[in-house]
Image (cartoon, rainbow, N blue to C red):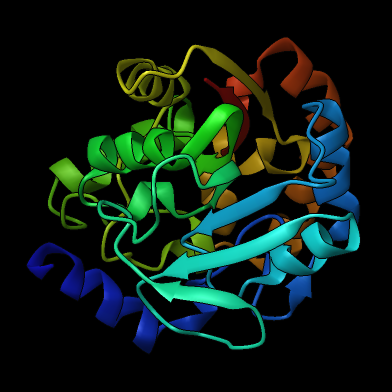
Amino acid sequence: MVLDDPVRAYYQQNPLMVSSPFGGIDGVNRELLLDVWRRLDISVTGRKVLDVGCGRGYVGEVVEEHGGEYVGADFVASRTGFRFALADSARLPFGDKSFDAVFCIDAFEHFPRPEQAVREFRRVLRPGGFAFLSTPNYGNVAGIVKLYCERSGLYRKDTWAPFRHWQPQELERFLTVRGVRALFREGGFTRLRSIGHPDEVGLGLFPWIAHPKMPEAVMYRLQRVFGSMGKVLVKLWPGASLHTFWKIGL
């Protein structure tokens, strides 16, 4: 557990960083979540769902509203009111074949042992189960900036991200679509499908849009430009988006 301690301490001290395109501290973006589920052909009705790295468990509200059973797991206890286990992603305290789905929403990039986490996802899934992931994607311009900032010494390794005006993370691994696919295939998953997020094409292709010294007037203009182009660009190149959403089946 020693490797996890700095990450745990970081999120205890920086609760606003427990966030995702789907929500976080202030609630859940139901419209986006349900749209992504529709596009990935995900249904939670009658399914038992484990949310690893659940944060405040905001996704649980939507799972239960749509007829699913929700269980959260995290190494920081942020909220009560739902079934919850204080747990390490590399050693989940659940029996084999206990769940129909494993959710991991903007937490996978913070796991020190991702290969073991993937094996645990597979272990606790029932036959025919699937994983639903939301992960940052650095296979674009943001990735080039991340590599430069970390290799030049401006940021420590695995700490740069464009979120909250380039605030350093404790552990923000360099994930790409290809890398996520390789990890899950090696872990025994066989059916992988991913889509990009049109609203974050700007951060993927021009991460300076969130730089702390970016003038607000320029930032708003850039957001409008990328907002108008996002849906087209992400269809042509899903990897242009800073976030990728996944359905990964056994």
